[in-house]
Every structure is written in structure tokens, then in C-alpha cells.
Image 1 (cartoon, rainbow, N blue to C red):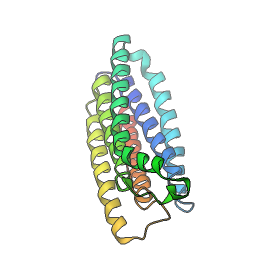
Image 2: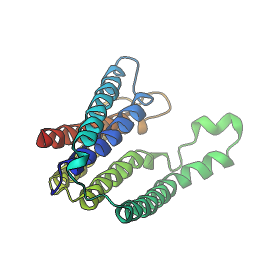
Image 3: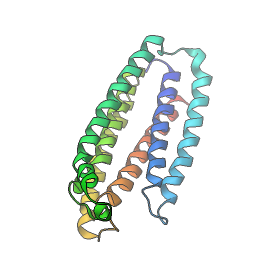
Image 4: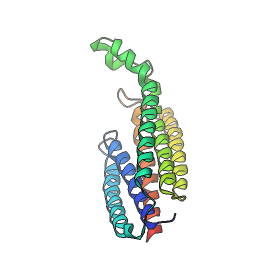
Length: 205
């Protein structure tokens, strides 16, 4: 990393991703466990604000961010988002078709393709880890590659733990698969992202 401001900017971007994951997890958590992702959102906002302040403070010292770099990153982000959206849509397509074909009274009991839905947060989590690697490459922050690797481990760990818990716990209502995979993946991914952001900020101090 050549410029301190680039590390701070990377920390800000990663903290935003972590905050979004925690915010997404809130709606997939139960009333008693919701305080965890809410706390993550608050912490993410604080870390993001510190990242912005550090970026502004160190920006005059130099940065690798140019118009060309921003354009390349924006293009990569659009392509990456489209691929992720296509992948998650393909996973959910069978369930959506079955639900659309069912009568209104039977929609809640549709199970065709539903077992695949727990893969969606895992795919998005892996996609987020790839995005972190893209940020590392764009801003030339090598340490961030470790955060991307940790994100991949978090995605795999959440998927495995969710599968284990689905075997030993009873289904919750009509969401036997997503009820566990969503909050687990959100919490682990958000935690890894925020920890990575804090680590980068400490490196700029």
C-alpha cells in the first residue's frame, strides 16, 4: 500500500459492506437475537465514519485513485453485481415457478426447490469476498486480500454450521432452511468485514 488514504478508503468501503450485511440480517433474525445485528449496524456506522475522517485527513498526502481507476472499478462492480444476481435468481427460480403455479391457498405449502434457498446467502457472501478482493486490487491494499480470504471462510463456515443446525433443530414455521442460513451468514460475514475494516484503520494510525 503506497498511500495511507487508500487504506482508509478501503476500510470505509469494507465497513459499508459489513454494515449492509448486518442491516440485512436484522430482518432475518428473531426478536431475541435481533440485538446482535443491530449492534453490528451501529458499530459499522462508527467504523465507516472513522474511515471517512481518516480518508479526508490523509488525502492530501497522495492517493492512487484516479478517474480511470474509478471507471474500471465501477465497470467491475456492475458486472460482478449482474453475475451475482443471475446466480441467486437461478437458485431461486424453481421455487418461484412452483409458487407462481400454485393456487393462492397452496402457496404457503410449496416445497419444490425450497431446499436450495439456503444457498443464496452463501453465494452472496462469496460474492462479497470477491468484491473485497477487487477493492484490494483497485486500491493496491495487499492486506485486504486476507480479509477476502477470511470472507470465503466465513461463508463456508456459516453454510456448514447452518446445515448442522438444520439437522438438530426443528423447522421454524414455513422457513426451515432460510431461517438459519440467513442470520448465520449475515452475522459471520458482517463480523469478518468489520474486523477487516478496523484492522485496516489501525494500520493507518
